[in-house]
Each structure stands twice: as C-alpha cells, then as structure tokens.
Length: 218
Ligand code: NYM
Ligand code: MG
Image 1: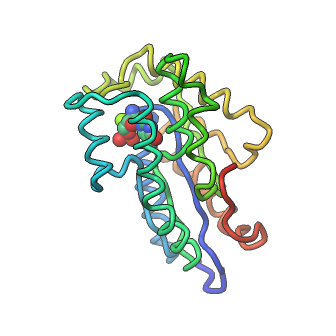
Image 2: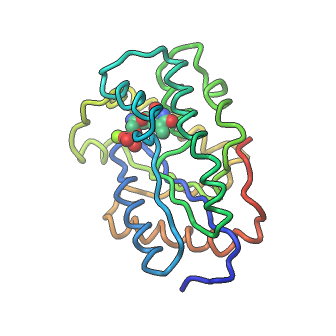
C-alpha cells in the first residue's frame, strides 16, 4: 500500500536493446504502481511530441539527414527540456518511470563507429541531468532477440548496430559508479520479468528518502 508519508518519488529508468520488452514492462509497472495507489508517471525518450522530438522522429524514420553530433545533442536536449519537470514531480512524491534515458543516449551514438563520437564524448551532455535512483537493464541475448521477429524500418535497427549497442551497454554496467543498475533477464515470460522488476522498484521507493534529494548525473 502506498505510504502517504513518503516525501519524494523515485526516478526509475528502464534501459535495453530494441525488442527487449521495455515499453510493455514500463506499462505493466506503471499500472501495478497505480493499482497500489502510488503517485506515478510514465514518460519515454525520445519524447517525439515536442519540436525537438519531431526532428528526432523525422531523423529516425530516415526522412531527414543530420550530422551525428547534432542528432546526439538533440536527443540530449530532448531530456533537458523535461529535466525540471521530472525534478518537480519527484519532489511532489511522484515516482517517475522512464523508458530509455541517458544510457541509450550515449550508447547508440557511440555504436555508430564514428571515431569522433566516443562513449566519453557522448556522455558529456548528460552530466547534470536528474540521476536515476534505479536503472533496470533488460538484458536479452542476440538469439532471443532474433526469435522476437524482425526489426522495424527505423535507423539503428540492424543486427550490426544492435550488437555494438549491446556490447557498449554491457561495458557501462561494469563501471564502478553504476551501482544503481539492476540487470534483469528479459528472455523469460512477460509475467516473470514483470515480477522481477516490481521487487527492486518497490524496494527503491521505500528507500529513496534515506538516499536524500534527487542527485545529478556525473
Ligand atoms: N535513441 C534513443 C538514441 O539513439 N538516443 C537516445 O538518447 C534515445 C533516448 O532511438 N533505436 C534511439 C534508440 C532507438 C530509437 O527509441 C527510438 P524507441 O524507444 O525505440 O522509440
Ligand atoms: Mg525501437
């Protein structure tokens, strides 16, 4: 049951490859928390509804061409344009579930193989954004991903790109400051994965007040 005395909400990010089941799991998590009477919001990146999001959407669909640096910074700007509202919601006690965030931002750009776009470079515009209290990485093997059907028509939806993205995601998990990352085996049934996600989220929500105010990405 929701605890009315909880002071702030938790910032919970769900990351992973295309076809890992992120959006379905975010939706299920959102409904479960609402059913338990928690104040909850579900947002996703890219947010294709804003002017910046529309430029991103057009790029992803191959309807426009953009320099690799420019599109990278637009993805980041698309997060910055709601950073304050995330902050405000968390302070109002709302738990915010985020479908893709800065890890996707850095990893997809670095996976392009452009030598000027290192992971280090790609991370820099993320510094200062609200820091997730918990990041759930939905891990799926290439074999399981292949069983889930073909890719769509958007940019980045190719086997070679996804393999590089997966390896870069895995390299991020090993960094010492990323102890709030929880790896979930997403190659199982929807219900099993949902249960595995709910537990750490509830635990995190219980503990946020002892963590203190929302931190910033460094
Ligand atoms: N993507 C997503 C990026 O390249 N950078 C980012 O910062 C974010 C948030 O957009 N293939 C890529 C990953 C996806 C694509 O996302 C569209 P989705 O969740 O499939 O709509
Ligand atoms: Mg996708």
